[in-house]
Amino acid sequence: MTVRSSEQRQITERHEEIFRCAAGLVLELGYNGFNIGRLAEAMELSRGAIYQHFSSKEDLLAEIGIRHLTKRLELIERGSMFKGAARERMVAVGVGLEICMRLYPQESKVLEILRTYAALDKASHDVQARMRTCQCRILCILLGVVRDAIAGDELAIPPHATPESLCFGMWVLSIGGYGTLLGNLTLPDMGLDDVFRTVTRNCHLLADGYGWKPLSSECDYEAVEERVRQSIFPAESRAVYG
Image (tube, rainbow, N blue to C red):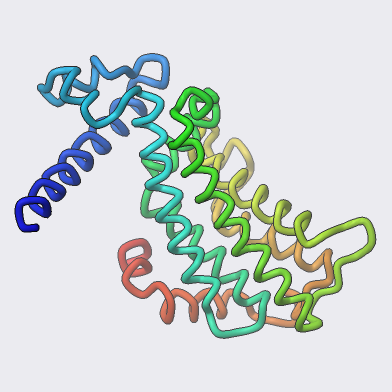
């Protein structure tokens, strides 16, 4: 048991080294410029040593993406457990997502590169399935909060809309907004000074448009965010905000 644990620890540590180096290289060289040979050279290893752990560069990058999604899922899940009205819980989910984007920007960028180049399609079926599972679990949490709001008479979905369409809108606003931090546009180019606050405001506008109570005019949601940071994410908030 001790030997197996030691071997597993060594594998985990080697994976961490590979992930760190690979993330840095793919951000420096771009998707097309990055390959296992460059990685092996940077780590002073043989290609075979890398291939012992990952069968392709797509699998390797997808594993980095899965790591990020797993962290994202954990933070979002914790946010959804906030004690409050359903909309306050959705605010807490948003705080968890923001913290994740702030804490792990490199992994976020690698995930964006995977999507931009459709690299996930070239990864193994097992890796693709694990990523889809993680993504589905995140969306199920959002949908669960929305359905709780409906059950609690805090939200009545208007005609020609669905709980899924509201979740989709909030997710696209958030991930699309945060995606500007990963691209070449600067905030002044877009007339913005704070992407995170802009994403939050737009999500509130969408929730208000659906009539999700309490409306943003009826509740101090910035105070709710602060309570969430203090009660749900104290350690992460210190790391992010000081």
